[in-house]
Amino acid sequence: MIRSHWAVENGLHWVLDMVFREDESRARLGHSAENLAMLRKLALHLIRQDTTRKRGVKTMRMKAAWDTTYLLHVLEAV
Image 1 (cartoon, rainbow, N blue to C red):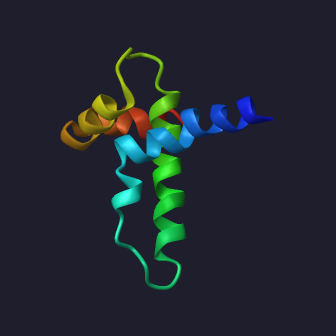
Image 2: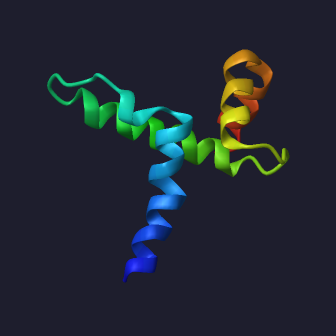
């Protein structure tokens, strides 16, 4: 049971904290925190689906932010 908890923590929550800085989010009004969390998880899922590059999630996220052709590649992979 403990190992399965840490598998989830290391596989999802840690990545969201380190790559998307989720713990530093200041969204507090209404449903904004839940909506942003859902968008972050969607972005993480889309980035992880791209197997053409062997880079870290943070690097791939920044590449998608800077390079619109790569962004379109990630979005079209769905």
